[in-house]
Image 1 (tube, rainbow, N blue to C red):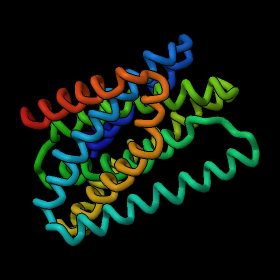
Image 2 (tube, rainbow, N blue to C red):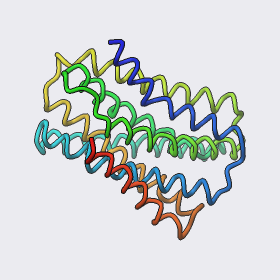
Image 3 (cartoon, rainbow, N blue to C red):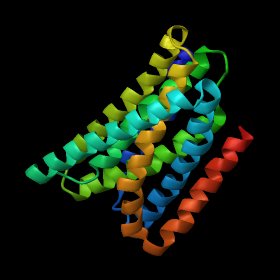
Image 4 (cartoon, rainbow, N blue to C red):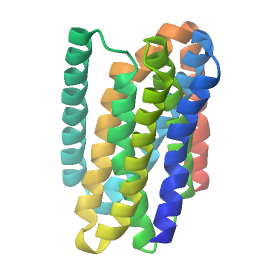
Length: 234
């Protein structure tokens, strides 16, 4: 159980670190777009080589596809609700990325905990992919939240809560391993992949494109290449 706490904290820490980095300086929009583009590429790699591939191997296509559908719909509905409330209250932007970090972080770290408990050890590639993608996500969202007028203390509290929930998901995965089978694990992988795909297309990539413009594609490919290389090494 101690190992689950440790690895959960390691994987979730960049969520808070990125938010903290956003408070230290005003990130130039172009640089922020480049960071988001790199993170988007890393997430695409994580979906392809960690979540979907692993889910197929564990439980086959049926639970994976079911998880994909539920994850995609969950993010879509949650994002629409937040957008509607933000528009009504003139709330801050940046919330979609925070929702995405939560909806993909929970199942990703659940998978990490299940792997620890089942004796498979820690997937270094998965951990690094989580680290590489979490940092840009939190920097981008936190910067937008601050730009929209949210207080630093409230923003840091928000990202601390996201990080803690994700960390506890690793512990939960460790605890429930004996009660779930490969089909459940495949569905969890699918859920994370579905939520991530909708978040990428609806929020992260458009945000990166609006800030970095013609550089976005190049840095997205770079992020994909780095994360994919780590997956193959892992």
